[in-house]
Image: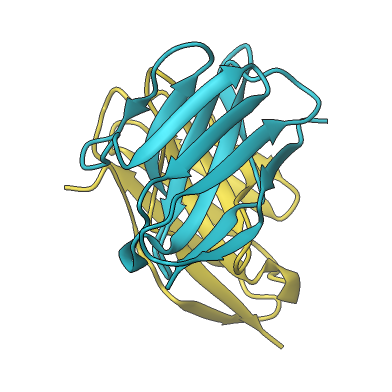
Amino acid sequence: GAVVSQHPSWVICKSGTSVKIECRSLDFQATTMFWYRQFPKQSLMLMATSNEGSKATYEQGVEKDKFLINHASLTLSTLTVTSAHPEDSSFYICSASIDRRSYNEQFFGPGTRLTVL
Amino acid sequence: RKEVEQDPGPFNVPEGATVAFNCTYSNSASQSFFWYRQDCRKEPKLLMSVYSSGNEDGRFTAQLNRASQYISLLIRDSKLSDSATYLCVVTYTGNQFYFGTGTSLTVIP
């Protein structure tokens, strides 16, 4: 159980286009989903926290108008990179949270590798 | 100052060696602590949670020192399959995970 999928797994696009990435919890309902970005040889950086039915909370330095997050249901969150540029090329990973008694465990999707030409 | 700091390594150790990683965190209000493992170009996977009393899972031992604000991971009898990047994770209220930069381990035959 606790499987998270992401689609697409990789995407190549031209500069200026928008790219949508889907994150789904396949066998559980996730009250909270998170979006991370990882550049080569760096750690995961939290971009935003997404709660179903409400606006996402963005980390400092992350442009909310550029990285649009929609969390329409308890099993689906989407990240849209608007007007992508080469510097947006990165590994984008989502995670979904399950409430445990003493902590909240996060399960990670397999990631989406975005390359902007 | 970063929320979570780790020695990036790389650590290159022979098979069978014991290796230890440390991680420090800046916010004393941190609530939960984890070690994750990430293989190249893959998503992170939970290795173990870290408790104040310390916990052990086979060859892996994790310790938490709240007073000094650091956590550690000890790997005994290293295997080739242990080669990966080990990520220290700290959470606060709101369940956000904050990752360390990761420590790269290569176990050499």
